[in-house]
Length: 402
Image 1: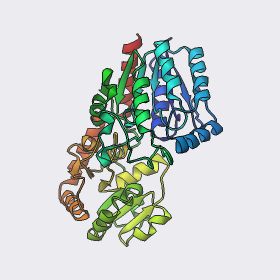
Image 2 (image 1 turned 90 degrees about the vertical axis):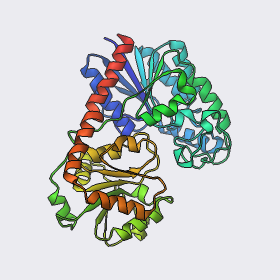
Image 3 (image 1 turned 30 degrees about the vertical axis):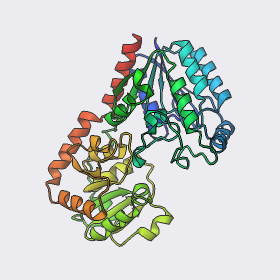
Image 4 (image 1 turned 90 degrees about the horizontal axis):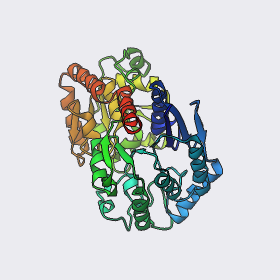
């Protein structure tokens, strides 16, 4: 039986961790042996091995903060991983998120070069192409194309407090990421694919396999009980937003302007914290972070419109989840967001004011939302069904090893 190994920071936790675990299960169901090697937290997946410990991760975080060269530490942990891989003898490796304070790039990619094992690398963001950051669109930086230096985002993840090592990191990433002889790059969106084609990764085959949404969970639901429990009328027009994006420094003024104009609408904010209290108004309902995805699916379905205030999304899973729940989306014309929205909502200029955002939401309110909801559900089934997209991975794996 052919063996598939996956490497990711986590397994079964968070977006990349759930993808890793779910894909492992699909791989097994399709006649292949599966094993996951992960760095942090714990997992209930039956065939997974953790190769780091808390001390090593904390040390990596500290070195990143002080020395600034993220993912070039954790040498002993990564040597341990390589020993595990040599013992397992995989026929192919799917590499997930490399950053996260748990891996050493030189050790791992030297192994890839010497072992000749085919590698499929999923780029969950743009970190692999840059000398430091995981996203650059928000500040319109293009240094990553030719060589990073004087990084303007040192205080952004992965935080470096002392040194700017972006020039050196970009150079060394290019060196090590160019070593594998048989590697395929998978992007979660066409937007990321096009960025990869402009980077030093362009020497490899690059394709898009969209991130998926579980359409058995995220689907239109009867939510009259939820509206009632939140003190809303059944005919209230509900706009849903995520607190982290609504109230960040770049958005807060336009969010407040929108909220004031939308006084006749109900605005439900998910993930609201104590520091957000000063921004809340009478027409707003705050909900804490929702870890229960069944509950989250209900909240999506309850809304009439999801207003995504993000400026940078490699895929925009929240957008796809809202659409799958039958909720049209209004989002900025930035990164992969328009690609996911399609014609199931409104794509607005990234510089739009709160008033302009309000006009778009109001215009959407005056359309046939029922028809748009059906179109949104259909769009997700055709493009973002996780089971279909996991099978695309399986087909790619089998193509490379069978």
